[in-house]
Image 1 (tube, rainbow, N blue to C red):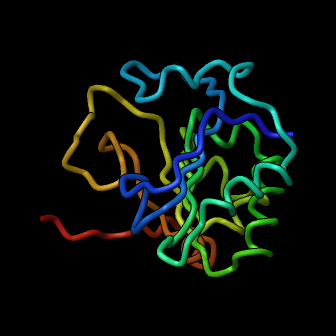
Image 2 (image 1 turned 180 degrees about the vertical axis):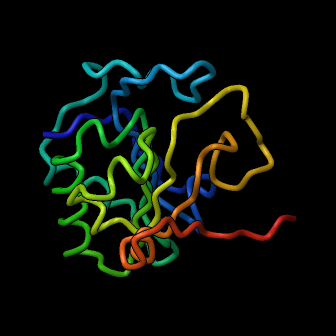
Length: 165
C-alpha cells in the first residue's frame, strides 16, 4: 500500500519537461519553511495499492510527457511501496524518466534498491537559510540534482548541470 496526497497531471516545475508529479504523504523532517506542510503527517492522504497508484499515474501520461516525479512529503518514507510503483511504471512505460525528491542525502540512500530505478534524485532537506529561488529544480542551495545512474557507476555524486537564463 502507498499513501499519497495528490497527482498533478501536467507539471513543468518538478523536473525537465512535462511531467506527472506524484505527491506522497508523510515526511519526518518538518523543515522550517516547508513547501508542502499539509503533506507532513504520515497518516494523511489516501491509501491505495501500488498497482492502483501506478494505474492512476499511467492514466495521466500522454506522448508529450517526459517522465514522472515523486515528491511530497518525502517519498522515501515509503521506499518499498515507491519501488513497487516504479517497477510497474518501468514495465508499462519504459521511455519515461523518473525523478525523486527526498530530504535524505544521496550518501544515505545510494545503497537502497530503489536507487537502481531512479534517473534523477534531488537530495537533501530544505534549509530556509539557504533558500534560493533562482536554482533550477530545488529550493535551497544545499540540495543537489543528481544523475543517479552515473553516480552509481562512478561511485561518486554526479550532479546535473543546467544553464542559467
